[in-house]
Image (cartoon, rainbow, N blue to C red; front, top):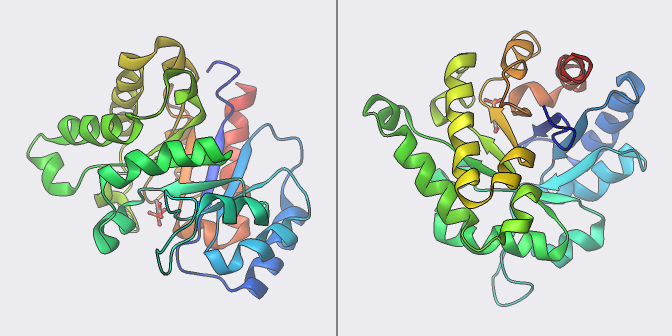
Length: 258
Ligand code: PEP
């Protein structure tokens, strides 16, 4: 794994945790996490808990990401939140295109084509989620779907910024189902995504981090993270407990040492 591809673990809290929960979580996490472990760690918190999450993490290196972001800086978009608003709070990035947003809130590849470069330009780290449904996999459509999602979302990102996007491959059939992808299957899909970035820039393909997400738990993280193209994990359910995050970070830290 090239140096630039520091292992990355991100926890997605979804619509869980109040500000009080977030503060307590941060303190518990910091008291258990081995420091200097070489792993980049981020928590994707609900908008209302972002400030408290940052406060609970007490200026540590742990990043805090929003779970969505509007592409415009400001405007008549009731209920939306923009990049400058997140930056003002001290937020480091935004999860974009999570399958739950695509499925329940009509997030489109066209909107993501604006959101990803808008996040980069504002100085936020975009974490772009892509992945196929079970029906698409069974119909042999996985690569077609991934190609479409990756190419559309990255279309307006300049080649020299491609490696600043973190991509999370999340097969929809594996999210919240307990049905984790086999390491080989995840490696194949993530190798394919890296090659898609390579179609734009060989250098970016070497440096871009691609994570796996879908029912990652402390007991299955190591074998997934050992795959050559998998640079980390986006973790939903298991991230609700800081102890789960600590165990997964330890599994990722092993990859730094090997
Ligand atoms: C997610 O929310 O992105 C996710 C992968 O969830 P889970 O780990 O619960 O499958």
